[in-house]
Amino acid sequence: AFATDTVFGIGVCFDNLEALNKMKVAKGRDEKKPFPLMVSDINQMQEVAFLNAREKKLVEKFTPGALTLVLKKRDTIKDEFTNGVDTIAIRIPDDAFILKLLKEVGPMYVTSANISGKPTTNNHEEVLKQLDGKIDLIVEGKAKSQVASTIIDCTKEDIVLLREGDITKEDINNALAC
Image 1 (spheres, rainbow, N blue to C red):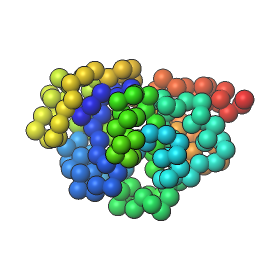
Image 2 (cartoon, rainbow, N blue to C red; image 1 turned 135 degrees about the horizontal axis):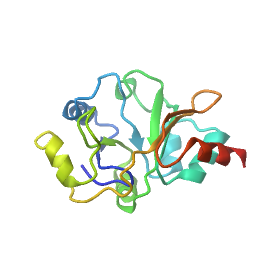
Image 3 (tube, rainbow, N blue to C red; image 1 turned 45 degrees about the vertical axis):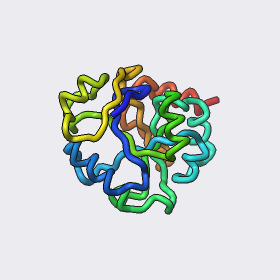
Image 4 (spheres, helix red, strand yellow; image 1 turned 180 degrees about the vertical axis):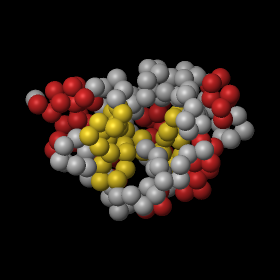
């Protein structure tokens, strides 16, 4: 577990199915709910998902940052990593340590470091209370904004807001209007 630019997160390398399944068990997460992927830049993003001009505009405006985009995945992502769905949620975090890590190890599935349905965690002490003994490592620290990322579904003609964080629907609409 480690601090991110939003809340505390836990993550695994995107090609490690065993670690991904361990993360599902640790969180008590619904088997059908896939994990979001963090990438270091738009190039890594385009290696795993399809981006059109509209999505590229949003990536350029809001990333690195607290915007997660649900996109059509490329065949490089095996179905067992997304529970059979043809989409993937992707984000470029605004954190120098995590960006460096992602450049070194490649994309990582990263989710909030909490038991599913429980409050998100913002520091390593809160993570210990929920996940002690269930994950391998906790890096001391504190999350920056303490607000989860905004999630938008870009797979339809009209963008659908799935979760609003610091980036609002109005912010997204204004960026697309330019």
